[in-house]
Image (cartoon, rainbow, N blue to C red; front, side, top):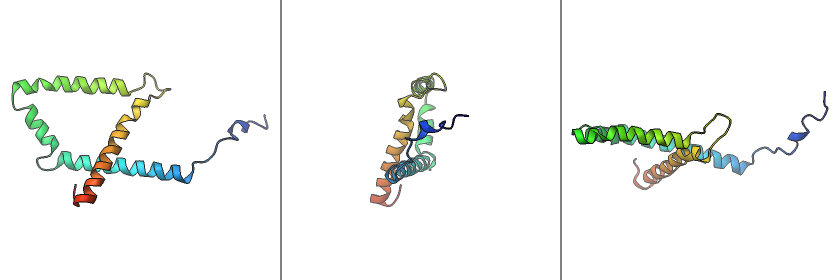
Length: 115
């Protein structure tokens, strides 16, 4: 047994307090973004109801459904890594979008008092 088998881990440092605070703030912004989006989507006359009404109002707008599915599929292909061992930087895009939405909903809540 090699007595120095953990020598390669000697330079690993624990996360600092500032990094922990930044990670916690990012997590809270994501949670606020998810909650705010859910409230906007599922409220009375929300985005979900408006989108469904628009898509099913005529045959021409129903043709948008395959285009939306294609766009979502292409977005998934762009964000996903080709194999499980590697990661892509664009995979963090949904997290940053949720953080941006969280900042928006937090600002809206602070300034107006409601979402």
